[in-house]
Image 1 (cartoon, one colour):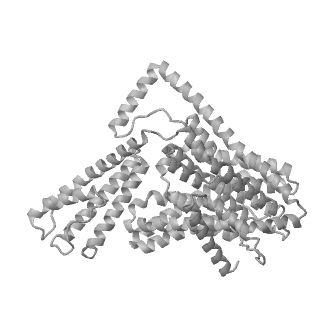
Image 2: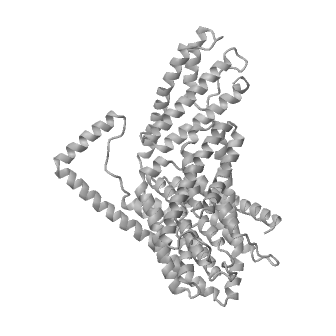
Image 3: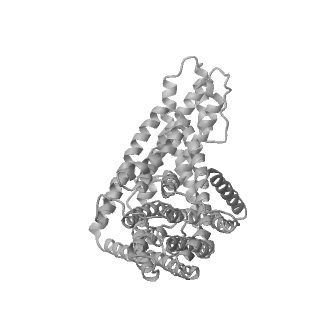
Length: 562
């Protein structure tokens, strides 16, 4: 693919994505179908990217961006369902699809069939989360879907890399695939965490939002390449680095956070649109490869529909088996506690101790009900990771022979991705509406959490005001001190209010310094409250964004004096 072709694909994909969003359509599906139609233009040559470009350049920033924006607190709170869906279901899907595909597709060996299984295993939560947010899905369901998307991408791509290495014949540290998987996962996470620590230290030393943002753009590629160099999972390294840096982002400068929100949002749109367009443009030539290999296009299409059916069935079975198991365990636990006064007393004492330490009392685990489980079971739309992995299959093995079954794998992966978008993506909104899942108390809960965040922030401000009044800056008349503190209190509670004093006033510098100290104290207090699990993650995120915009306003008004 030359530079002109690449530019045309990117511009076209962005234009189609914008038109699809304006029409209320799914951009991923529309871009793929338009790319497929464009590929039949007479004289259009095949557009082919190197495997390393697809896997090493496209995927790392997408995974890193998702990890940055997901709270580790939410991940820990929903650890069991996230890991169950993101790891257990992915492995089960890869194995079952691999065995089935090896049975029904003569061109696939067991190894290449497992590659197909790993490719179609991870669902893409982008569409499901967007639909769920619009229709008011419970936040717990949204957190599980978002967390699953991160974990399942990493698990599936790690399986993909291991099975691909085994088929291609490249050297690996361990011949045993289980040991290789464990090494790849553990070392990959360690590399990501180590790089996150280094990047965080460097960012604190830079103190320049532009350079910090550029460093953030480099981190996912560095994590991926470094892990891959030592034969660990580059994908897990990227996700671990994103988690670690995202959890410490509140300590970065407000300018860096504001810039990164816009940069990563734009980059996500660009890369996702490109991947769907690229795969759509490949399909005509994949069909030609099938014909050249002596395969019937219609036969492969039929096989692809069978694999799609297997993929659609595995997730509901897994979800409802887990739901039934959790329901039974919950009933048994409640009956045991209700019949044992000693256990009740132990729980009561433990909760009193937790409350005394400022923590929430221990409660029963809250599992998904059957309606929430039904929605989760129907959110298995495949997307950018499936298509990118399919496009990343090399043309040849290590000995130079053509990769066996490459065209069949890519064609089936496309059928599964488009099929899930059509079947599940188009019916999911109607399913959510019919189940009436929106919580009538959610709005009240959100309001209470927003008020709690404000209370925590105002309490944190008190110490700053006391220090300011006890040791006022030189040159500020005593009669203005109380007025300044009252002004800061009012404006800290209203993000839309402009900083009051004129930059030319005598006390503008002192006002700005006090204001920023208050904002930083509020920010630290809200983060601590969130990390202690006493404040909802969404409420904390919204409040922290308000503080960033408030700080940007005060610096814009009084910047040269600060």
